Image (tube, rainbow over all chains, first blue to last red; front, side, top):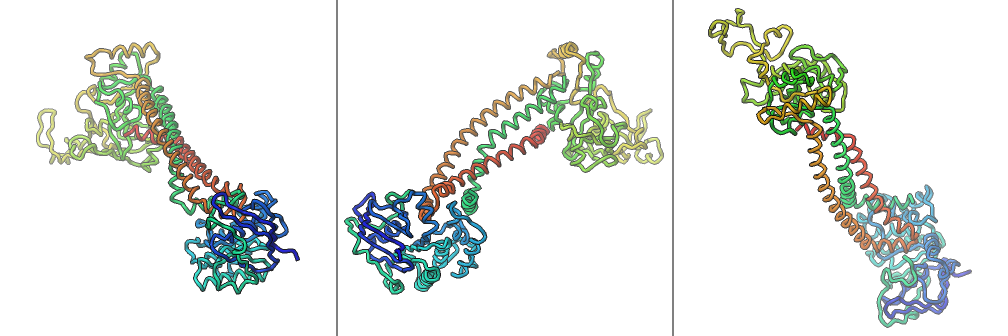
Length: 238
Length: 393
């Protein structure tokens, strides 16, 4: 079976600083659940960005879901991402001025390649019910607990029924109860829909849940250690 | 694009006070110069149209503007009175037809215009309901006055006292409404028309009371000296003129000394007009003659100068407001950098992400412009009413 993510001879560095990420070869199997671990600034989030086509490497190939992401134009990568990749962030990244339902439906409002119809709305409500926020769909994110916000963010990520789910420290801002609950939701979804789940984490407690753990200590070569920041993505048009 | 507009709309609705402030500011800076222009255009048209249709005015020496505003728009500042003899003087000169005007009293805020039936012909005023003036104590209402007073033929309108301390002089007269005029889109619509003699009745110069020769008035008679009868305050004075008491109303003093606020002169031609104006050039003359259109042009000149200053000020304030609005949008863009990055990361198209932000600016600017257009439309519809109300005060 073809891997869902295949990386060859990848070289990446930011415009400023000495950070370099070099991955000679990495493959992630279909339907796998994989955890990326490693020290801060080792390039875990950067690799998620490269897999999703958010960032582009200086050299090497990234093939995601059979598509060579590195060869796509900016517009094609956006269309690819919104349809095939679900993203969950540590800070949830919900829009404060949209209701929970509108936040879940957001992908359908910001890319014309997706069409918002009754079926999609129904799916959004079903997802909300499954994660117990169906009674909070009219609320704004500011009125939700941290756990509820992340559950809404997970609904947004999976609404398009992506085959690859990328989660960047999805439980990093959650208390223990919500942490396990959100993990259950992510793993349950991955299992139910045969979706590949790749998550960046620092939390050793949850590693047992993943089929595979990739330690980034083996990849990174960095002088000036620093985490990836928003807006510093080489070759990524925003 | 509908979806993008929806997101932009939600942002504006969520930050409603910021949106309202921005839309309000844009509305004002667009509306102020345009609305003012419309108002000035309308006032120019109105002022000159009515002044154009009024050839000459004769009144006591004083402010020509006060004389014109009082006679044409029934302004509440009434000029010093001239004498009825002035109307006779012009008529006897054979140079012009005359219409006496006495605009001094009010009834529930509406001017009572004392004049003659010639005024209705001169202004082309038609009675829509009822009939025209026929008897002392009757009144005919302008269309808006009728609406505002809720009165029609058969009802009564009572004149207002000028002062509670003026016990001996102006006292309320109950006037019977006999007709309502057709809408004329002029100051006449707000007026209550009476015969000039009825206006004098309101002032107390013409009055009616119980017949002192009748037995029931005997208690009020203090003494008789030939034809002169001296009576006390118990004699009943009439505050309404009816067919029964009409005969008891009588003039005191010389009619030629009775007051008018103006005499409206309608000469048959330019020559007669010039000759008539020539007769009022003497410094000793207590009366003045004015051409309303010339007085109004002077006033318009002043208004236009003021408008230019106001527009210049509005433009400067507008530029400052636009700069502030631009700054608010730019700061908002900076603050929402993270949001744009999220939209980019989850796969928002470049056009959609840019459109969300741009739509907000477009919606604010368009709402401001639409509101300004609405206000301008309202100004063009109701500006004339506002101008008239201003002229009346």
